[in-house]
Amino acid sequence: MGITKLLDNLKDYLDKGEKKKKAHCDRIDELLAKLEEKEQKLRVKVENETNAGKRKRLDTELKIIAVQRRKGVARREELEGKCK
Image (tube, rainbow, N blue to C red; front, side, top):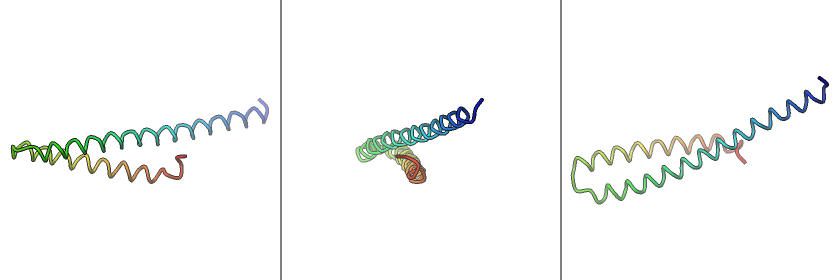
């Protein structure tokens, strides 16, 4: 195997890694959008709920989703330079 063939294989390997990172960034963006939508729906449900037990459960679920979004946003910001 010649040096040019090895260099081509290495370039292909590195390009695949970059594409994979890009796909990972896109997936995080999709998940963040879904979490935001779910958070908004839960906020409406919490406001409209009159039962104290259900309201407390919805509040807990809302807090969990908010934490997940914060973690996702932090991870997305870490990858900001790598995603283009």
